[in-house]
Length: 350
Image 1 (cartoon, rainbow, N blue to C red):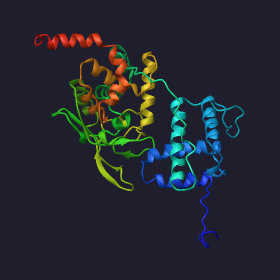
Image 2: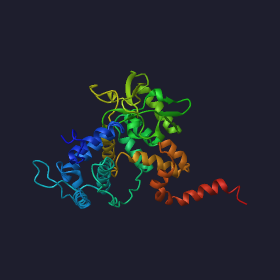
Image 3: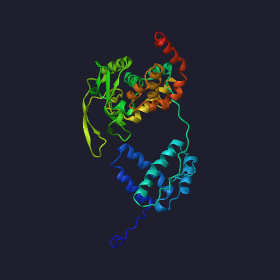
Image 4: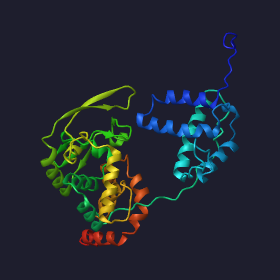
């Protein structure tokens, strides 16, 4: 009736705001990212209050919500008698950051006068240091893998630094063993979709293979190079668009399983489980599977590789990520750098 009279109320509940914002966000981000957004908003809605007007949410409310997320004094789930464990600082910052974007949308659209998140700074967090495998640990882990394909998979991961979604999506059509190159054309996500690599910098990037990586791929070729070619759909960044890729997958789980009930490529989650099993059998101190990527970067830096080259190989837009993540670790290898300079610059020094 207000609309008919030319008077429209801009008031909106938090639940209505969330639905509208997520529906519009669908056009901008990948399905994988949208799933994370849905999960975060689903957790935040009961804390903020679904039926509350968005204009009634204050900064004080949000600060208490942040405190509860961090300490664990959270809303109890149905059937639970004890609170859920508190979340980590990076997770809490992520929850607050995503929800802040939603309320900024409300402010820009005229639903609220100002974003209540304005002035709330992210919680400070300690930087996680890379924890690469030593050469001895790497050898022990590879020896602990029960099948040759699994040995090849983790060897290639460490020798190239690829993301695990890129590793399982790798096809023989992307590899030129004569030229010693491997092109990263796609990524497999936790939502079981094939997409373009994570960042624009990583799109169709060419990885220059070191000899150990070439040897691993030659070994793997005996297992899967003559396998069946599949046509898969790869989602593009533009909403609603996709393209077909012919793929003979480098790593095929069907050759590992006894009864052949597996699919023709690995899921990202299963790759993490394979890593953890190998670590336990090898008796190695636990690290997350992502350390395979850190191991490549740390080993390359120790060998004297240019950080810009490493960043390009790993799919970063520039070397800032390498300096930021590995800067303090690199300082521990100053003496190694002096030895390299003595070997390479002693003849040029006046």
